[in-house]
Length: 255
Image (tube, rainbow, N blue to C red; front, side, top):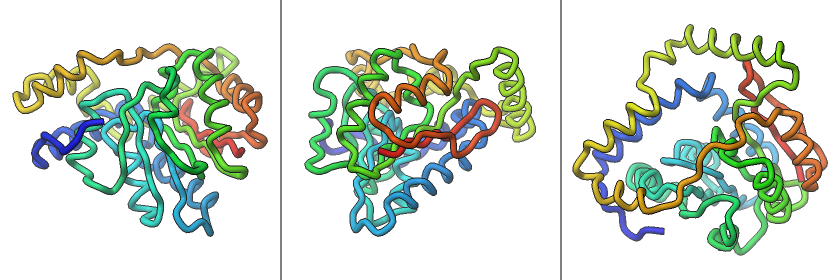
């Protein structure tokens, strides 16, 4: 993890704002998804003085910051493999949450968190599809061990339907929703990164990023039922979708 931020707050604000825009292309009703995730965490952690919440694949801190705002008494920790995105989070959101650099699922990633006590909640959004099935099975088991009894894992992502025709329909429904919300008017992932690479203030962080073994997306073909099965195998007693629009779900699993 880096020390003091090397970015100006103005630069961080600029790129985080653009990130928020481009992410709307890829997450149907993104703000509602965040709100539902926070609703689940708020419900499960009610009555706990300082709940410990882990955000997996936190990127530049969007979900972690919203959770910290919704639950100001919570201790929110974000983990991501990308040092540049983590630095944007630190510079833009300040001390609302803590951030750790680690590649989820690799040897030693849990130790890098230095938790010190059981987790009350784990959250993630459009991040765990980077993990292949073998790695995801291991990560789910590790998270089950880290969570207290009654703790919850909440994952917002796109999940394939088992039936090809239903996958086709849910995908179309989500796309139509995104079109009505003008989501595709925002820049895309590649144009965001292309513009960012032209910013001289980020040159050192980009060089640092290039030196890291960043993960590639390998689990996008896993169906919702596959995730449910892996979670139950890992020791989560209650598993189910608590929100859906098209093929976008918020999946909750209680330890």
